[in-house]
Image 1 (cartoon, rainbow, N blue to C red):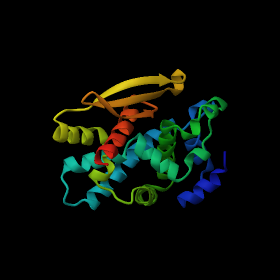
Image 2 (tube, rainbow, N blue to C red; image 1 turned 30 degrees about the vertical axis):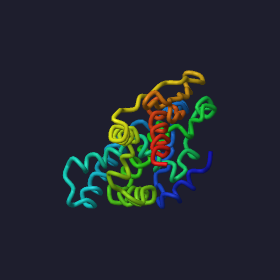
Image 3 (cartoon, one colour; image 1 turned 120 degrees about the vertical axis):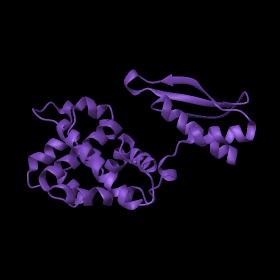
Image 4 (cartoon, rainbow, N blue to C red; image 1 turned 90 degrees about the horizontal axis):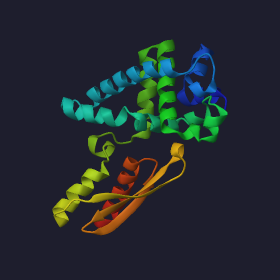
Length: 223
């Protein structure tokens, strides 16, 4: 684990209250009298507001439905995990040895929660303006293009539309198998179109494997 001073440099923010950043980086598995869950709760609300206002200003001609979909693509576990990885947050968190051995530093849920907690901590110490600057800077770094089409990469829907228009049928998703222990399972999914397997992929969840397989199928079909 690296010193959180490097994290402060990446954020361009130095905490006055060092206990705040330590708490924000402390996972409950670390077994301290404190952890980052309360700060995570606060940070989630702060990020929801910041991203909502950012999109409201950026897309002045978009209706509420579009704005909500774009925000949903940014304000979620996957979105916060990307932001966390952009500042190498996993290198600074305090976790138990068991979590360490279970690849805890790269777990999306853990990274996402820690990112929310750090944002919550900065908000507590300095207020909305500074945390807004930090968040929007990271958003623009991670997402060079922010729009509904770019963010909502639902490959399953796109594949279904393509196979319906091309073959007059919809793809089916078949579970080939699952490997690994319960806490670290990997699923393999195949896509069948007209009784032919056109792609397969593995993922940490069935949903992830389906999306990966659909992406490969689209690449093959568009060839």
